[in-house]
Length: 261
Ligand code: PEP
Image (tube, rainbow, N blue to C red):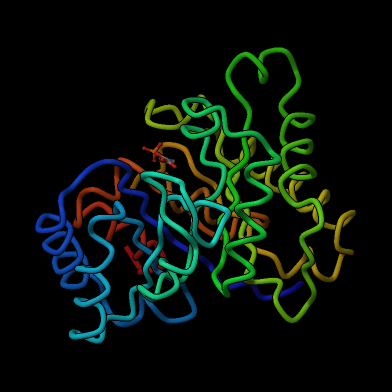
């Protein structure tokens, strides 16, 4: 079985101004131990206005924390008021960019086509997309979870090449919409089943060897109390964490899930 580098990412959404964001990262770094970074990617995704401050902090304190952005436009520049382009993010040393988060799919009608263009742009500029997919409560209850997720994967990854050389650079986050910010978490078994299905679809797109190297995160009310059972699943390679990443103590416990208790 392929060795995949776990990726633990915090999505702060529209929380924390840049001063609060600095404090949050400083405290997170204080709570984390050297071993927490070993063989594991630790990522924070603050709002756009905090990226420069966090970039400077990471650089000056030589923190092994990586910077993520919550979104981007697919064009390099142009008359797109209020948008932020991939080259702008690259200049800020952003390593990861979320694409297709369910809140943007729902609130801004982001389609797979739009998400696909963003994924392509993120890759073109040498950053790593975290492509979010997941079904709603209604879709799950109607037995359509798998179909929805497979269709989102196919649409959002259309024309995106992944080889065994860059398989770790395209990350999928399986985030059931009904579990995001609700306190409801998929059971480890259900999360595993869906993440395994994601990998099966990746295998049909890129071949089994590449799919075995690609990272599939679970997201949806991940907390210190459930992270271990989720991370123990063979097809779950990390967590995308919203609410719990806003507390440095809680996020450090999640990131530090491998420590002996
Ligand atoms: C998210 O925003 O991607 C998320 C998973 O949020 P939460 O952990 O709060 O459910």
